[in-house]
Length: 282
Image (cartoon, rainbow, N blue to C red; front, top):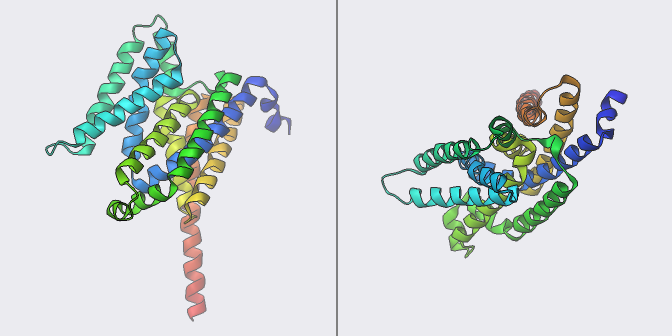
């Protein structure tokens, strides 16, 4: 069993595991609403759009999490502003800002002396460099995410299924949407250090999507997504250690693999149930 437990006895791998577990919990809370609301393209664009903020913060020696959050907020506000134009769809606005923000981030990073190293870290993460202070920040992000998800649960649920119904019930869908975007921003900003700006999408979308195939209750989907994300983190770190692969990419890839495994298992389960029902009918 040494091959299974040995890597996690190393300090930086253990910190990476805890960082991934915390991020998985945050992404489980936010990603569930992304899946239910159909905000996948929006969240993908925001994850790419935070690169300029991260790059500026790194060059100035500032807080990377704050830079990522501010950039993601700017991206969300830009999409909102462009989508108000009657001649432009929201997808068009997202696409334009997606490319523009990503290009701006690469241009800013290129001003650094260590361009290749910085860009690789920003885009693909550096989970093995997670420090104790990063774990404290991630724990704070999880606490904030739990607070947002709990406070907005009723409004988020109504908004996810019928915006007009939410307005009728006096749940202020505009405010609920803003809080949902804030939760998404928090998850994306907290996650980039673990899996990078390009791979955040894997932990944010794949685990909740996998759980949605099995569970109907939102809290169950959130909890299951956190468990799947944590399992993908542990498995990804283990594979990375033994196979010498990039840790962040391995974690994200394993999370997506978990979704496809869940989809295949769900399809097989439905077929078995259908056959059993048919046999009982005879």
